[in-house]
Length: 107
Image (tube, rainbow, N blue to C red; front, top):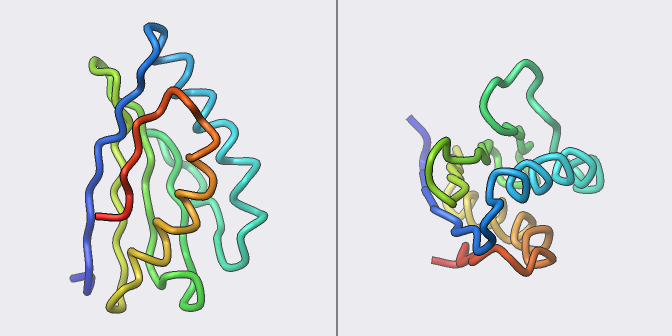
């Protein structure tokens, strides 16, 4: 059992939400290596799953596109207190560059 678990639903505010969401996920694959301690978990079939070492949140997150709704689901889990806040702070710095996303990861 993780010490923390958070879930977010990030609204996509453009009619072609699937293309936009897929672009975000593809761009995130390029962004992940820029964060120390993050690595993409291979062979994930829904969105992108990223492992975060003990210095970067001690857990993981999964960002995926909803099949039917204009939202992206984000699940973050950590094995340490305040770990999900560390993970989502770095992720927020990436997502804030997308004007058609309605994000609030600081809950």
